[in-house]
Amino acid sequence: SELMPSATFLLLIGSASAFSLGLPLATRVPSGMEQRQRCGCATTLQTMSGGGGELKRALCVLAPGFEEMETVAPIDILRRANIDVTVAALSHELTVKGRNGMSMLADTDLDSALATGTFDVIIIPGGPPAVPAVGTLKNDARVIDL
Image (cartoon, rainbow, N blue to C red; front, side):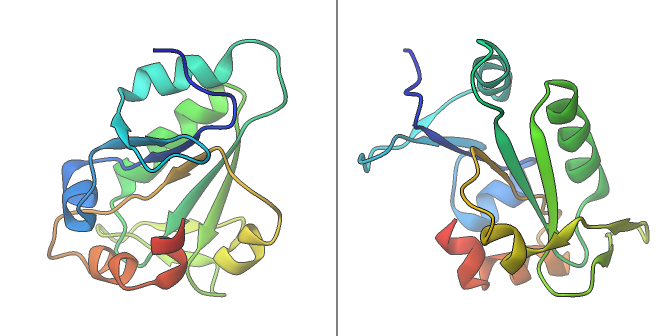
């Protein structure tokens, strides 16, 4: 089915991220509707990148212990699709250390990112359930409200 122009996408990369939050891998939430539908990530990207409309915006939320591959790959793919990606740290400390010890510098903190307006895509990298990021994300009201 065709996607509504005002639809919001929640993109969870990796089954550990999705299942720990109790969500499918990708969820479409049309404005004004409670119904959620699964859709493939490729369909989401194709729909968002075409048409020459206004620039789409994505938010990637980083928590300490994030899964590096679940972060870097989606950011790269979305940026190649000409989508404006903002990487936001949960705290005001912008350097966030991942699960395997790699650090990533966020563009901003989550509160500042949310103050800039709405996003068309939300990326929430997680990791295995033992990783601190999963519990941190699950218990952060700002992330739940996204």
